[in-house]
Image (cartoon, rainbow, N blue to C red; front, side, top):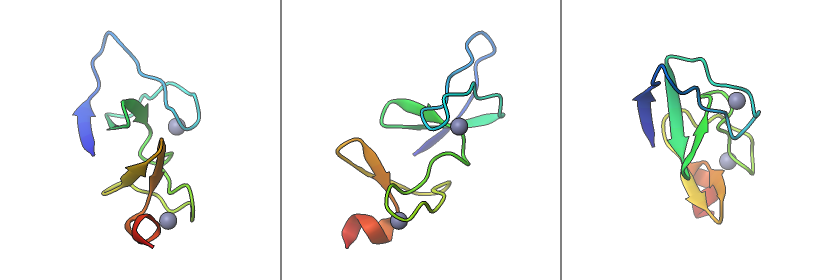
Length: 67
Ligand SMILES: [Zn+2]
Ligand SMILES: [Zn+2]
């Protein structure tokens, strides 16, 4: 899970809400970009700002990934 500075020339689109991401930092997961508030566990909808786990194109919190 990476937080990367947004390049000025290119405004990425959020894979969660399909809006452009104008935040100072964006999340890059599964080769897609996300608002920090849009990256949520596919199971319990918990926000995954700090740590996430991916499987088959979906992201999960630690608890749901390992359960
Ligand atoms: Zn979003
Ligand atoms: Zn979860």
